[in-house]
Length: 218
Image (tube, rainbow, N blue to C red; front, side, top):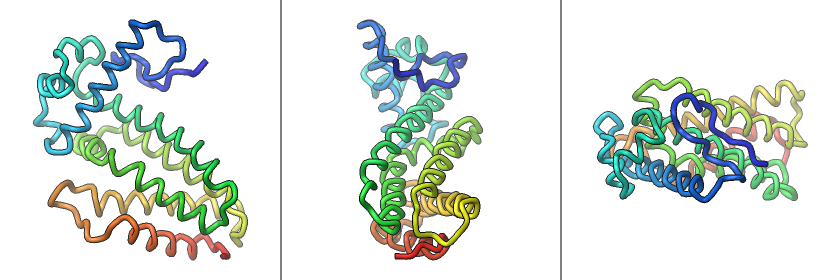
């Protein structure tokens, strides 16, 4: 059985995943996903503080009651969005395992950086909202996902001259740097960030920096 990825059930929202859901529960999960999608869309143009429960419900084509039956308030909805981010990041790890089976270390590094940027960019509005709220539980989920990616990469690099411990520490630093690029280049919001480089330019610069720092031969 697939275990629920919901961590804070006491907050008042239902698990996101469960392979034994009855039809009624299945509809409830789809409703919850629709609400999370609506929140993500609205955060593209509105600040979290400006948003109301009524706006989120309307965007999802639902009633405010549909929200309050699943979430204590809009902050709990934001936290659920981060839990979805965390759950999907675990799926990304499985995809990486397949994609990097026959790839050299430079290719693994390139794919890790590229996939992290591509995966994270759609979540930037939600991350911006959590940052404004100083929401520590959401930050903890992001840190867990980032460290899991870094540790996975360090365990799959074969040509580094570093010890396993040093490689692990440096790989975590690399992933922190990728997060900083996302934050500083894209995080400020439409018209406010320093988005002077496209994704490919960012990947190339980060890959070259990381390859030297991790002492990868290739």
